[in-house]
Image (cartoon, rainbow, N blue to C red; front, side, top):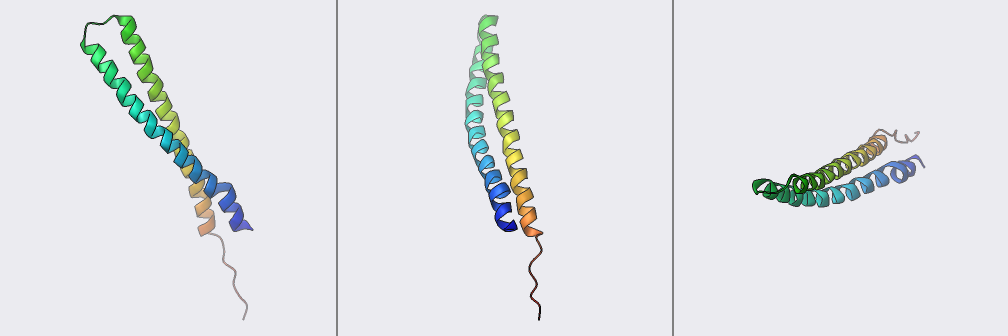
Length: 97
């Protein structure tokens, strides 16, 4: 019963959280690269400060999202690691002679 509890309450949800957040982190990373390229392109040209501020804000939004996705992915990995540690350190049943 303890083994099942570790799997259902820690390992599976932690691994799921890690996988889902990592998936969204990769998507946000791609979007951040695009937003930064747009910002860099606009900064190299003669553009108004208002347009430049909007481009910078878009880039910062993706930075914050990527940071949050990374934090949640790490949290999921930690939860899964705690569950795996519990499974590995669980005492085994000893049979009496």
